[in-house]
Image 1 (cartoon, rainbow, N blue to C red):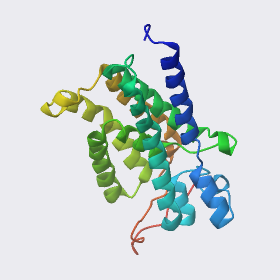
Image 2: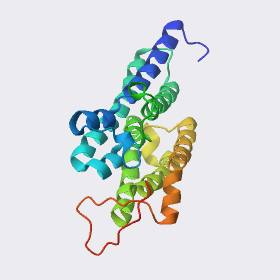
Image 3: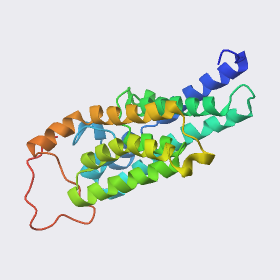
Length: 234
């Protein structure tokens, strides 16, 4: 990094700012206001994200929000690949810059410049951003998410489980034959643990509601007739 020239620094900082701007696109807020006449941050859990859109407005509103949030994270990190043409940036620094891009995009989602710095938790954006680095690991995390969600119907529990699986899968992948052509750096291993801790911290209210038995369940194909209603506490 000490040998970087002015142009390299300029391009790296520009990409980080662009990642933040992309992450700041408040899809849930804009879709809620444009097509439903509400600010989603004033309803449900007051979180500008896919889960709250699904809970308050249904699948038709939640699906485009997830897609947009996922792809803005993916685009924010993928754009860093342009810097591979800079001879001062080696493979290790490319991964490091993409990791910084993940943080920039997620911070943009949580504190969006286009929505008065009040956004969501950034899970979909985080998933999209990490997919831009190691998609195979994300797919395994998604499998863990889906398994927990189908059995419990708690999105929050599924997200936390997938987040905790992330560093374990990164460690497993780094020691396997699969990683020979795409070596995982120590920085990315630290990053995976940071993601797990961040997800647990951002879901601390959900953890308390799970303990209290007041966390809302989500049913994609309709609620079973014998399901007892929860005492929701958003």
